[in-house]
Amino acid sequence: MPTLYLVSTPIGNLEDITLRALRVLEEVSLIAAEDTRRAAILTDRYKIRTPITSYFEGNKLTKLDAVLDALAAGDVAVISEAGTPGLSDPGYELVQAAIAREIPVVPIPGPSAPVTALMVSGLPTDSFVYLGFLPRRRKDRQRLLVQVASEERTLVLFESPHRLRDSLADIEEALGDRPMATCRELTKLHEEVVRGSVSEIRAHFDAVGPRGEFTLVIGGAQIEKPQWSEEAIERGFAELLAQGVPRPEAARRLADLSGWSRSAIYRLGLGGDAPNDGGLERGASDLMSNDA
Image (cartoon, rainbow, N blue to C red; front, side, top):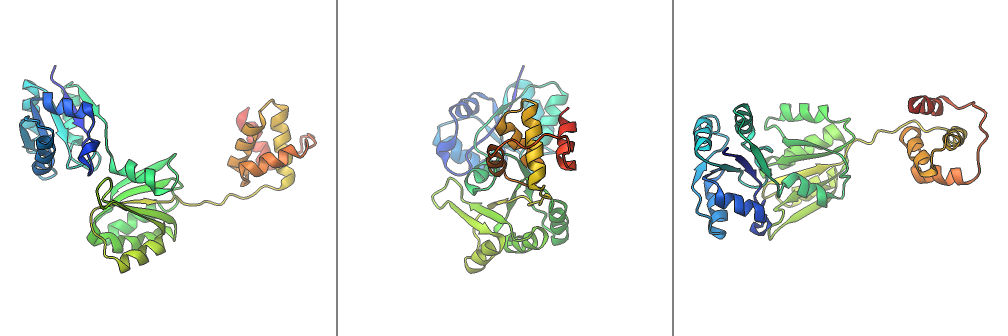
């Protein structure tokens, strides 16, 4: 059965294409490309002669049937202008239509601007929220930023150069002066990553006009947790040890609830076993009942 391939392509440096992606682009019957000119640069570089048709935001619905008809005759590869198709780029509707027709959909993973920016941002990468492009209208942009103001995970989003300074002002107003990084020209000759607080980055781009498409990585909200007393920590730690929980795991569980760092709890626990009289304060008692 013919297959729809979603092929990730370089976000800048053409050497970032994978061997598997090159093979698939050469073997399919048709390449549906967001930007046929950019696609031609890639296929010419690697001497791929597969026919290319346009499939972009403005024609994705009218071209849907044509691409599905092509799938009836052979495999089709979808590529975006750069990076991963379907991720803030055309592809979602086509994938839905292919699934509805029980056409196999196969991802060919590779470069992705959000993940690449996250890697070099210096901000937490274990959990993040991808917001795509910020809305063009300021009112809509501010509404979105207010909605994510309390989000503790790292935020990743796109912005254009001519809206960057206005968006940075809205980010500082809605989210506060958090740590962030702006990434542009990633994997290209003039790659640039600027790190600092929102206000520092605003000052930078007031002095140096923004150029190129930007990926922004913003630190999550820092929610302060009420800190337990030392006595509550000692009792909770002793209770967990009595249950056979290893010291590092006990420290981790208490750190999640107590407002203490894991290392501080661990050091406190090494100082001696606290009395286990069952008189835990509420926070530690909640921990035990939740783990039961």
